[in-house]
Image (tube, rainbow, N blue to C red; front, top):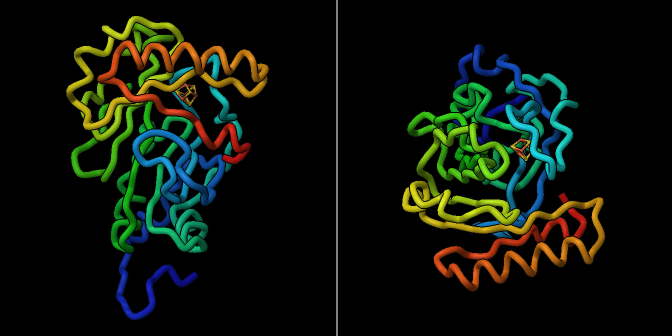
Length: 216
Ligand code: SF4
């Protein structure tokens, strides 16, 4: 496999290329939520998670071990230089081998994480923390700074984020959307969250627009 970019010399450490990761899927789509809504990205969805949220829509227990080289090959097939590591919980992985391979080729790396694992400095260009401590109060957020704080609103007291809020450049509340529920049920959650944002304007409303459109 030719992993290089035409006209450039890209030399990878063979240990990086053979590092394996649990991969659920890799796909090209438009970011549907948060500060970067509407921007095309390549999504690398990792298997495994250290939490079990009731609204979780990812079967993160079904995955295939793939080498960095296999992952790179799939990424190179898309005409896109932005990547989002998502999951499951991507911070469970040692992402440095993938980082080295992808940064050499000019990719911008983002992560969507539940924040329970601290991220090393310099690993990622964009950090989105979506805490789940409204469900798991014992789960302690370790990644307390980043670009985006995105909280699923299920009626929790927003003062629980007071210590976390200033560590992020953008802060969003997102209604809980469950695909198996009716339009009316999801609509009620949307209306509740919209009202909370109107009453707490330091937060912004984020909608999972990709779900309403029926895409990944
Ligand atoms: S943290 Fe995210 S991936 Fe893990 S169970 Fe919760 S919603 Fe699913």
